[in-house]
Length: 140
Ligand code: CO
Image (tube, rainbow, N blue to C red; front, side):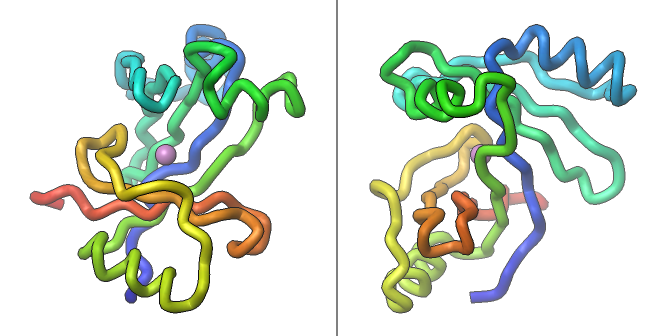
């Protein structure tokens, strides 16, 4: 496997509306997507676009108490950095690579918020960092 671009940093927030206002007012962000729900993952998300390489901040709000983000916010009430996401050219090859090293993958490969296949690698096998691996969107 070859490490690709840092696509986004996932940040859990109690309120996407409040977080968007913060990014605009405090950080001067002016390119933020509209929020949308991903019911199968129990979250509402939106993306703050940064210039240059186009790395994004993924703001993530739980849709219900069943959401995995709900527990994270219970431990971190202000919110906080939740995961990082790297691109790879071939998701199946990347999955084989991690599995071949005995790294624990959380659940099946599925379609992520960018419409491309993703999977997550357990933080205990990744220096404490929950890591999302995402196939590079076609056309990029
Ligand atoms: Co993500």
